[in-house]
Length: 321
Image: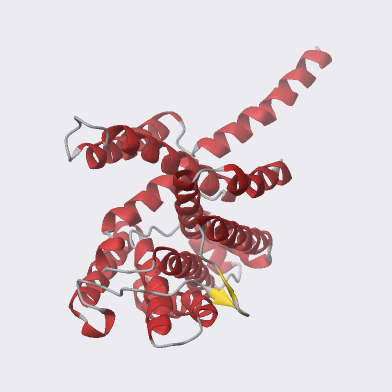
């Protein structure tokens, strides 16, 4: 199944229109950040409302290096490294917090970061960074939407593979143990603090990579490109798809990005009020989140998996009867 999905994703950029390619790219960028967030929330049991702050760190790292004549490819490589490093620095003190306290702390970090970026002359202030070059390497420059679509697809594959390897490793088993019973996990020898910091850094690196690609794709950056609402969107995507499920993160990002884009297109038609796109987006987030919490509390993908498992079990029961 996953190979079929990958094949379809690889063929799509060749047949999509320019507008559809933009949606495809935004979807892929969101998917990278949400895969990391799903790791953090689903496996480490940590709630973050500041995932977009690491996207911003990655984007500004790539953008600042590019405007100072550093090769764009090095800027793209530095983006996830800078985001992960920032996560380690801030993670040491704030990961001692739990539940809503940690959520508020990550939210505060994003607000502080946006305030700093808005006042910092070296980051362009409120105007931001303008005229970023296209991503290039070895004389090859990525100038078209289709080029960035394939770059984003490669980013999603890389983050998905890394996340899969992590959750299947000894670290992943330790993360699942501490998410369900932290005291018992610690008593069993799981280095709770180190594992929690590791997954926080990996989650930030995924968001930073998405930010780096975003910087070269749009060509400009401003603090307003990374609002708190973007972090909320990532949380809704992860919850709707299913926390602790990489496939759920991808499905949640796909579902919400596509639905919001369709509604935004409808809301910008002539005769519609100017506030219609944002209102419809908020409504979609709220309704999807309420529906999933009420009817599919573990998310769409875990619910589908349970249903598929029950099918063969019921068939076996009927045969036995």
